[in-house]
Structure formats: C-alpha cells, structure tokens
Image (cartoon, rainbow over all chains, first blue to last red):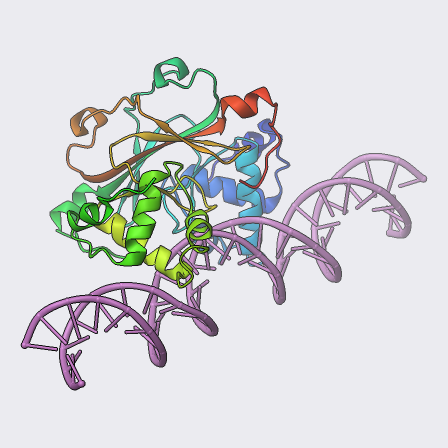
Length: 145
Length: 145
DNA sequence: TTCATATTTGAAACTGTTACAAAGTTAAAT
DNA sequence: ATTTAACTTTGTAACAGTTTCAAATATGAA
C-alpha cells in the first residue's frame, strides 16, 4: 500500500515533502477515488493525531498550484482531488456520489473550438447521472451526495 | 427590449408566470451574458422595489428544475444562468470574469464515451483562460472575477 | 367576501473554503 | 549543543454563496 516514491514525486514538482504533505499525497496516489477534503482528513486523522483539516486544504491547494494533482469542481458539495493529471472527463453519480473517470474524450484544438484568439489554461468535462450499480438498484431518488 | 412572450414561455414549461418570475426570465432572455444571481438582482431591484434576492434564487431554481434555463457552475464564485438550453460549452475569462459560449463541441454518444451502462442526465464542458480582449490588454494578473 | 393555495420576504442557518496570527518544527551555521 | 531563520501547521474566525423556514402577502376561485 505504501508508495516509497511519494516524497520524490512531491520534490519533482517543487514541493517540500513534509510528513503531512507526504501523507496526503500518498493517500491520493493509493486511493484513486477522487476523494473530498473530508474523506482525506477522516482517513488520515486517526493515524496522524496532529493533522488539522486546514493542513489538508493547504497541502491540496499547493499540489494543485504545482500541478502535482488536479481538482475536480463538479458541484458545490465539496471539491474532489485526482492524482492523475492527464486530460480526462469525470462522471458523478447523483445517487451514490461516486466520481468515475471518463478517458475516451473527444478533445478538439483551439481553432476547431472557435477559440483561436483565446488563451486556454484549463478544460474540464463533467457528466452527471447514475452509475451502473445505482441504475440496477433503482436508486434514482436523489440523496445528498 | 421587452419580450411579450415571456409569460407564455414560462407557462410552456409548467411555471406559473408571477410578476417576479416574468421579470427574471425576461432579463435572462434579453441579456445573454450568463449573469449571476447578484447581477440579476442588481439589475431588477431598482425597478421592482419589492424584489428580494431570495425570490431570484427561488425563481432560478424553479426554472432549472423545469428545464426552462440551464445553470453553469464553472467555479465557486457564483452560479451563472443561461436561457439557452441547447447543449454547448462555456469559457470563463479569469481576468474579466466574462463567460462565453462555445458551440462547436465534439459530443460523443454514451457508447463512444465508454458509459454504456450509465444513465447520463447532464453534461457540462468548461474552459478557463483569457478572452481575446484581456489577452490584448495583457490582463493576465488574476482578479477576483 | 371568504377561503384555500401559492408566492414572497427577510433573517438566520448552513456549507465549503480561506485568512491569519500564534505556535511549533526543521535544519543549517555556529 | 545552541542559535537562528525560514518554513509548516494549527485553530479560530471570517467569508461567500446558497438554502431553510416561518410569517406575511398576494392571488384567484367559490
């Protein structure tokens, strides 16, 4: 489960690998579930008794700035974080709250999009609906996820 | 500037056209600027002295539910509202805060996306960067827009 | 005119996030 | 070892956008 190269990964992005930062990055690398801040904090707090939620926020913000991870702001129920920085879309299930990767994306270049004179710095594609499991369970009532 | 069919438009979507609702919908139909709640409220409040911001929130929420408009949640700085419900992308300028339509979109169907067993209810494509005007003005410092 | 129903209001609550000053940690130079 | 400077972390409070909710108001049919 432990990735010994987490500190190196942070260093390669110009991030000083403090104990807390390594723990947060490690969680993201080993749990590809697009977790929220709360999920990360809840998972790490028991074993790192001195961890505060602000530090999780600070670390994630720094990682995003240094392009070590990407942030998925698919709704207003808490940002999701993804250790995979490759360009890809995301699907969020409105029943279970799960976020799925969508890798088969049809990206167009700037000219094709009709944005020739723009400077594009970010592109995000978000799908919403119900995942296969929840479709089967007919969990179409909307929860708070 | 006035669109006499606004009430009919609301009715055709199963929305009772109260005075306030017509005013909000009318603003959206005549001002295709993807306004925020604050923008709409600030524009209408002077002429409709009894209007409250909660009513703007309530009306917009109802319109979205009834699919009379669509909501653009491109960042956490306030939702944008679009009277055009056609499937299209949006670009937000990080300097001036303007939101632009991106109509030339490469939509794939569910199978092509690899989401065959999912039930998709919504798709949003968001671009960020700098619009032509701000590129020219070299307004690349980030504001709070 | 009365009554039932729907709409609107305004204040308070709520949520995710950020700001900030104080406290703690780290590691190099002495 | 001790000092020092720079950085990291904490915890509280602030903040913004949005929602909740009970009371007040408006609407329209009987």
